[in-house]
Length: 466
Ligand SMILES: Cc1cc2nc3c(=O)[nH]c(=O)nc-3n(C[C@H](O)[C@H](O)[C@H](O)COP(=O)(O)OP(=O)(O)OC[C@H]3O[C@@H](n4cnc5c(N)ncnc54)[C@H](O)[C@@H]3O)c2cc1C
Image (cartoon, rainbow, N blue to C red; front, side, top):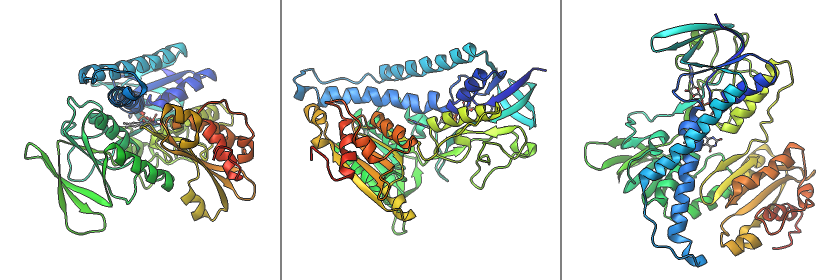
């Protein structure tokens, strides 16, 4: 029987990063993966394919609508959807190969099959009717998440799709109805809208991007509406009639009242994700779940079963690849006897649309609710030189700082490249920095990041260009 120091179940960003860090720390490691390819949701049907399509569709949109005003004259772009899907697949394959390379480089065994925990120190791996049992000192569960479903609405991944089907449609739908105005729905809605679909988003709450700063979300909604998105907020989809050529969705007000109908060619159900624990044998092994079906862990990622840990989407916290990665590193270090740690106060979130939305730390609503006295510094991209010359002035930077200490508590950006710009705020916050620290840091000119510095200056009411 093969024996290891660590067996990691799942090779998404949580699992493979954990395995690499453990190998770096001298452990003999194996990963178990039930999918044909490594890399989990993120590489195969999540972050990576969605970003490839967002990039390609943005280029299509730019070629059609923005080139001419810069004096670049091209004939109207034609969509070659199979080629775009091929571009996406090349991106996936390249990244999957990268993970395979990392496994080899770090001498990590890849065990293909479904992993089941038999008890402390024992994992059964089954594939094609055969199974083997491996022994290990520690086990990390990194089995990720699956799409959340709507009761009574069956996903066929053709006409009624999840995010997975929406990444592989074989033609642009005339009308796309998206259920849920969260990050994934708005990103995939952007892809298909740019390629020509009419997009309607139905959201149960009375706002989009739940959890993000309210002011940013409002501006984002206005920008998306200007782009052509339609929103039906405070409404829910309760059924989809698939009998005709066109789908007929029943929409009810969230607060109750008369139902209406919306027609669509494709319905994308994007109402969130749920932890994935099927086939792991957790109940029999004695690994406890919390009230939302997530693997329950203590602050050091330990489950209720000795020697078994869990990380990533399968445990509590934001369902983000970089959160899973950081937990993977931390748990490997803890197992190796070091002091692995994740700072959950500084985990950025990004929406990769045009413009992008990024955020780290507390929102204004959270500070109000916690009764924290804060000051706000804001700076619009309309007053940023680089944005003006590029004519990409949508959005603003918003910094929230403690009213007494000036410590930065939250940073929220809507604008082009916001996803790259957020990281200086992350570093600042990781070091407990103040708005003054940021305001006194020299920023290259002309960059969009100067708007971050100006927002920090605005906290002290001394922005220069406004
Ligand atoms: C469309 C979409 C876009 C996204 N975009 C972003 C983004 O831009 N940025 C971001 O941060 N996050 C994004 N996410 C979320 C991100 O993909 C997840 O947060 C991340 O993949 C979680 O990593 P993980 O390692 O916990 O699990 P996963 O990536 O879900 O990997 C889990 C792996 O475990 C395997 N597995 C499960 N059970 C077993 C078993 N019993 N035995 C063996 N193997 C098993 C699965 O096959 C899978 O490969 C997106 C998600 C989607 C769906």
